[in-house]
Image (cartoon, rainbow, N blue to C red; front, top):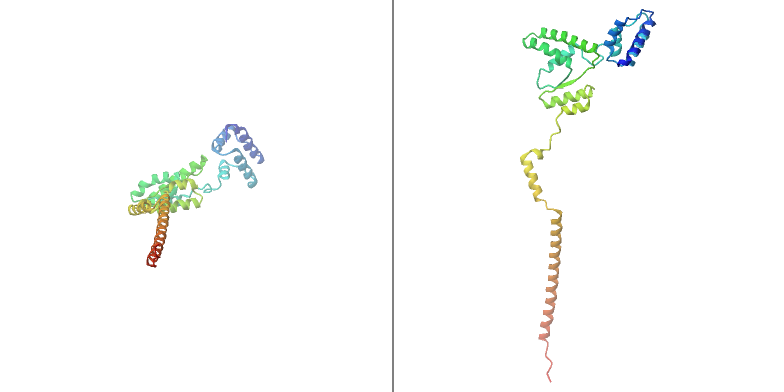
Length: 255
């Protein structure tokens, strides 16, 4: 809510208490409620009050009931319960694993990890759950939405699987997931030295189109010249044959 919503906020809360014929909250109470609900839109606060009136016939709302109406029941904001959060934190101990986690899980596990490394798994789990529940309660009271981040492991296959699963479950947006995954691997010919050398040799053996056209023209001209030479030789052979026949014929007497 914004500063200019304070007047409407007070009117909504007072009208809600009027519905139950209860004494309206004092200004000090209204200031406290404002601080706890300021992270929500005024329309959402009004809706939470109307929901309470529709479902509770006898008693005016407490601040906790309004917060539950605004956020939904515990876990509805996307945050895991303490036991699930502990299991996810343990997966992250394997450095090959990629885990999509939350700041609350990471902060609570940082508190419990020294106990775990000391060999007391039960004590570490209890320390984690206590810390996690406290941190989550503080975040919810402040109206903070759940935030997710990926803790990347070194195994690329596990990383791709975990990130893809998170996208499919709606835990990570696609652009964020794309930034977490490596680009597609280049083709082998671009990275394999032997393959690259073979590619270069094949390219060096290719003839440009202009050379192919020139060689085709030269071949056609050579064929035409050979054909002309054959014709000339055939004509000359006929001439020589005719000349020989004339020399063998009887000569006419001279006068």
